[in-house]
Length: 191
Image 1: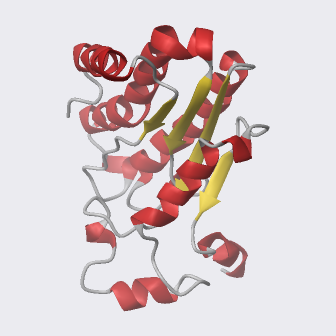
Image 2 (image 1 turned 30 degrees about the vertical axis):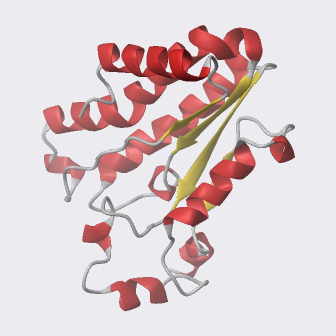
């Protein structure tokens, strides 16, 4: 729960600068989704918590990294969004809305931080992490069957995309959201 604490953010950025003398890359990977159900009945304090962690913290880290190093020296930022930010996501609606906001934050920062800093997002589908366990636990085979590539994501799928977006291979890429979803979006049109 510390990701959106500004004092914690300042210390994290200061410590990175002390240890390495630079911050070339920032990956905003903090996320929360404490509720499962329709947003019609969502407690607004829970909605605020989701936005604080998923959107405001990413902005805070981007600001602090910008001022500490990237403004003068360049770099790249990668925001971990979600396919939930690109389409309706029943039962995780507040999370989806926050990830849509993060995708737009990516575009805003890419515009404002150019030309020195590139800002992109990754929108994963379900990745096998502790965070997503509730979405597939006990029914992984069934869940994986919905994906054209026949499996759920694994952390290295997202790591590979982040490595690309922070490398010289993507020097002419900014403001983009790379969907890394095992092809699940291909099913969107099939009802």
